Amino acid sequence: MVEPLLLFDALLGLAIAALAVAVLTVHDRFAMIVLFIVFGLMSALAWVRLSAPDVALAEAAIGTGLTGALLLTTLHHIRAAPAAPVPVPGGVVVANLGLCALIFGGLAFAFLLTPLQAPGLAPAVAQNMAASGVGHPVTAVLLNFRAYDTLMEVVVLLAAIVAVWMVERGTVQAPAPVLGEIYRGFSRLALPAIVVIGSYLLWVGAQAPGGAFQGGAVLAAVGLLLLLGRLYRPQPAHRPFARAGFVLGTAVFAGVALLVAGGGRLPFEYPAAHAKTLILLIEGMVTISIAVTLAALFHGREPEAVPVSEKSE
Amino acid sequence: MADLAANLATLLLTALGLLFFVAGTVGLIRFPDTFSRLHALTKADNLGLGFIALGVAFQAESWAQVARIALIWALALLAAGAVAQLVARAALARREAP
Image (cartoon, rainbow over all chains, first blue to last red; front, side, top):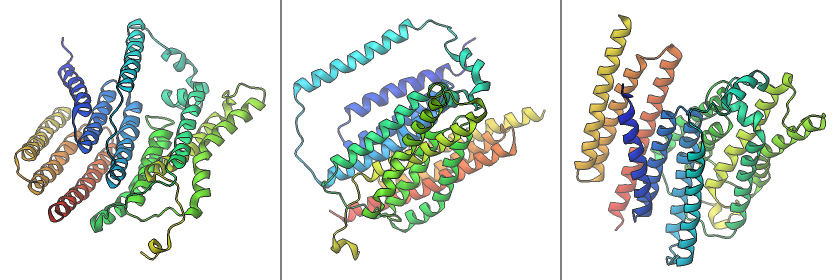
């Protein structure tokens, strides 16, 4: 008996590979980004077919939606200040090829060495679900059993926004495009819906696919809509709030770990009675941080004092 | 019996939806300029997604799931309409600029 969806899976795999080749070979930078977004959507579909809806949601929200927005806004700024294209030195190409080959080799090695039909760590997770404080295995792994890894991911985002604010200091910003009345009406209708959906994704993460990263990415879209429609303009006076937003998730996450460790336990060995509360607290704060950081990454540089001429716009 | 009817409805409606998607895609490829392409794409895709959402709704286990499918369709409709207008606006600006 042939799996009825085998043909679909094969076509999907081929389409993803073909899109990857197309992204790398097409010459127009805009087409490149659009193809990358399509590639991300197809990958999300592939994750659904692999029964990994959590990864699919993250791929669609962060890997495709927000990364696509970041690439498009970068293209907008590059177009505003056209610079002569710098030829890539041959040594860099060779080094990149070598590194890619290393990663590919490592992945192939790991894939070939993985025993087929092995249970993996799933039974161990299933056994300890009752002690985790949540009902969804993926959230239990991310926020409890392997919480240290997730803390590091939050730190990576924090490092990214610190780097962007430092690097972009003093660069010329292209004026934002004027999007018109229809767009404004759309954002007014869409904003409340996005807020509800983002919060829902965070809340449902305890029981079903969803969680801080997916919810945070969706909430970051609120920031994008506000920035694009100029409904919110970042001011220098808002910098302390932005900084507080960036650090909030990392601070609460590390703070909980330290407090738990102070009670004579391991850093992420939450007391069973408070596990759900602590996980929800961490997830809530991390969601806020992710949303603020991603929206700030989209805006790019740190808000600076606006020249007088622009103020009277 | 009810199951059979629901499955039949799903098959018919999703097939109809796919037909609209195919028509929209053909229009996207064959039509000469941005505006007529947008016309083909938005009309066909909105109807196509509507029929597919309706078809999938027959497989839902609860009214809450039906409501979520309806919300997805409404949001996609809203986004598609707004994006079509933005693309048309950009195309119009480019046509007048040079």
